[in-house]
Image 1 (cartoon, rainbow, N blue to C red):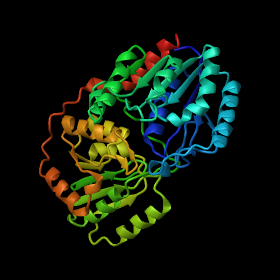
Image 2: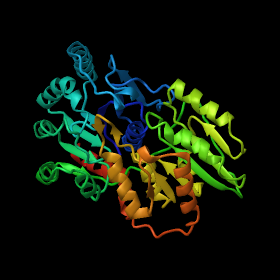
Image 3: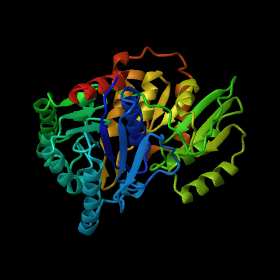
Image 4: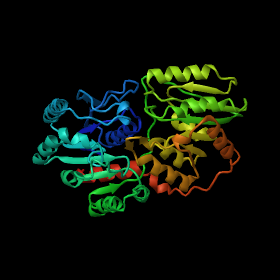
Length: 400
């Protein structure tokens, strides 16, 4: 298809892979269709140096960063001078790029703190009659965004949510406060002409700066353990290392700590791994062929993060999920809600992180291994058309 667009996508992350993988997958779809278009990514967080971004993407960073993996545990404190510095960089860059289209990832549904630097940009683009879109992996409205979201959504031409609408009811059921639940559902009813549920984005394989392929062992029971990028829940990895010693050499554990694993955690994992008594496991920071490992393993143990969950559903995998629900002072409803979805649709077992231990994990593995009969999936295959649905709606909204 002919047509030229100058596109910039702005996003922030906590050193996670899900947001990045989704962003790269969507931009790849746009580039395939509009090959001559100019595509830029504006990184509001620290660059993930373990990744290799495609050559067609122009990468820009604004600093200092607001989001790190430590922000999962600590409340994010916004320094006015930092916001001002970032805001000036961002608006200057936007003016220089002379955009046709601006996309913000997750905002305005979440990342509420970004409003301070985004508001001048949104006003500027609206005055210039540019197209403004949002791309969000899930229909989660962060608690801080509730009061502002109706104001900010007015700037947007479309808000793309990359799930089927069935996830709405699961998120809604996570609200204990009936008033909040009603407010949540009312938002999506009120804006159903602007919010578009595309279905899931089946992620492309991420390209790491250094390729690391891990092999499935034929004639063994392969158990894959992954916690995504490794920004949280270290006990998933340490418990899995210890649990592997409960099983014999007819098992093969592939334990992936995550490329964002902090150095002190990685040292701890390596020490635990060196103490293993049975040679039936490998420990790596990441695997370039993660999707095929999920497909070919007999059992997957993971968080309920977006990318991994989508692949689990796509392959109808025998799985145990340990959903990230936050810490004492923060509750994240995304993964607990998706874990219940996985349980209902593909029979995943759910283990709460607070109850996780090597012995508990062994018992769960025993249960799943003894149920190797493939269950009939309740997943609608049309839910995985997220890429094509997004692209067609995006091009239509851009009048291409």
